[in-house]
Length: 336
Image 1: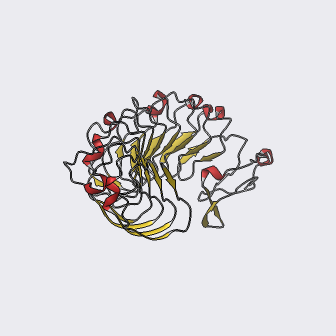
Image 2: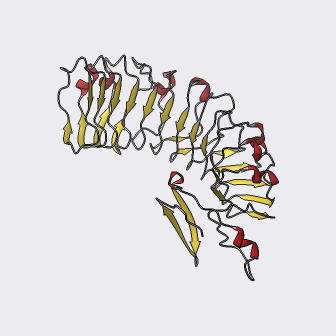
Image 3: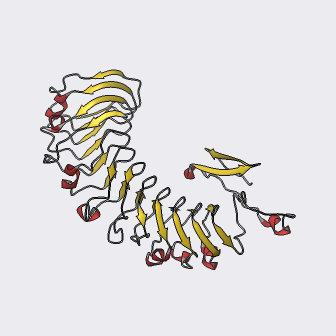
C-alpha cells in the first residue's frame, strides 16, 4: 500500500495515530504545511520502506521510538524542517539499513550521529545545514559507506582535512561552507559534481591531474586559499561545463588545455592573479576589480557565444559600476 499526499496544502499536526496502516510501504507528506511533533505511532508501521516528510514545519524531537519496528525502512527524508531535532542515543542500533538519508536543515549536530555509521547501504546522504560542529570527519569516513554516490555536508562547521575520495564511487559531492583545510585530494573517475567552495583549502591543484573523470561537469573551488599555477591536464575533463576558481591565490598563465573544454559555459577566475590569453567562446566575462585602462581590444568582437539555458548553474555574479549583483533564473542568450 502506497500513500502519496505530497505537494498539497495540508496543514495541522502529525500527532495522529497511524497504527492501523500496517500494510503501508510508501508514505509521502512532503511539501505541505504540516506542523507539530511526529507521532510515535509511526514506529509501528512495520511494512514501511519509504518515509518522506520533507518541506514542512514539523518540530519536536525524533527518538528511537519513531523507528521501533521499521525494520524494512530504506529511505528516510525529513529535510527542510528547521525546528525538528534528531535526538538518537550514540549506542542505538537501528533495526533498518537505509539506502537514502536526508536530514538537511534539521537539528542534527553538534556531533556526527554514530548510528549513521551503522548504515552500510547508503547511496545518498544529505546532512547539510544541520548544526554539525566537528574537529574532523569520523576516521575512515568514506570506507564505511562503500556504495555512497551523493554526499552533501555543506553549511556546517567541519574542520580537518578532506577524506580520501579516490577509491569511492561518489558522483555528487557538496562540502562547501565548512572549515576544511589542507591540500586538495584526488577524486574518483565517477565524479560528476564537486563543490568545495568557502573552505580553507590550500596548496596547488596538482592532485587534480591524478583524476580521469570523463563525466565531470561541475567544479567549484572558489573562496579558498589555493595557490600556484593551474595544472595543464584539463583535457581529462571533456564534459566540464562550469569551472569556478574565483577568490583564491592562483597566479601565472592559463594552461593551453583549458581550450579543450569545448562544453564549458561558465568560467570564473576572478580574485586571482592570472595572466595570459583567454578562450573565445565566452558567455559571461567579468573583469571587475582590476587596474585595467585604455580601450577594449578589437578581439572582443569575436565573443559571440550564447546559450539556450544556464539555469542549471543557479546564478551568475557580475560587478557593474562597482556594485556586485547575483543574477539567477533564466539567463538564456545573455552576453555581458
